[in-house]
Amino acid sequence: MTPRIPILELEGALLVTVQVDLDDQLAVQLEEDLGAALARSSARGIIIDISGLELVDTFLSRILAQIASMSRVLGAEAVLVGMRPAVAVTLVELGMTLDGVSTALDIDRGIARLHALLAESP
Image (cartoon, rainbow, N blue to C red; front, side, top):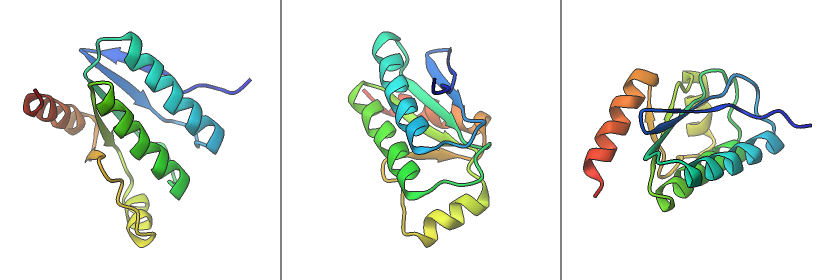
């Protein structure tokens, strides 16, 4: 049985804290679980904390961008928080931009960013 990343609902947002390395199968499972959680909740935002990840490869960065796109289609905004500087440098060196993904340094700033995004949206 594949482990699952916990998804918590807090104050109208879903919070995901990734504390294990995400292989491709677990990353796809997270995307599916988040879609289902958004569909059954009244959440207007998602905060994904990746501070526990040592590495974000091209597949995982594509999954994160897809999660952000899926979130917008389902009426929510997504904010990625906790990216390590080495991960950011690697993504830039690979030419990855995480189009459509809002970012913040930590969860507190991510919550503030999410509130700002929600204030901007109709």
